[in-house]
Image (tube, rainbow, N blue to C red):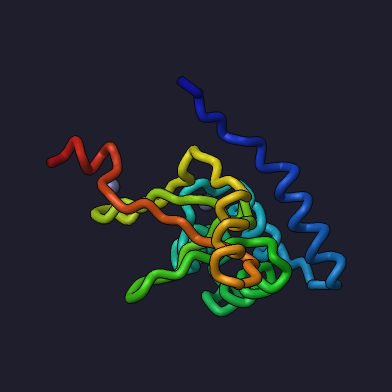
Length: 151
Ligand SMILES: [Zn+2]
Ligand SMILES: [Zn+2]
């Protein structure tokens, strides 16, 4: 059985800082704090959730600032945006490349699925359809261990 380690968020944080600095993006203390949250959060937070966490420290932060930074990072391919119909988008700032997720249908917890989707799958889909594939999305829906235990 594999033990899941919480990765050191520091390299990811530094990387995000450097990417925004390259763009000459103005690094206010609240934006730095937002990048730190994104680099360290494992739970695929929504913009509102990130905003809530920032607001304690920076009462003048606006939700618009959070969205602006997220959309910039998305344009740069530095955040993975997960859209769900009828609810807020969720963001993965640790792993910006497509990877499978487990979504709890009760508490809406989202975790990375500890499996590897082989490149062969994309290749096969491309071959069979004539599509030139740029990304994929794979979500597993069910009850998380906590929600299962609470039944
Ligand atoms: Zn749950
Ligand atoms: Zn993820």
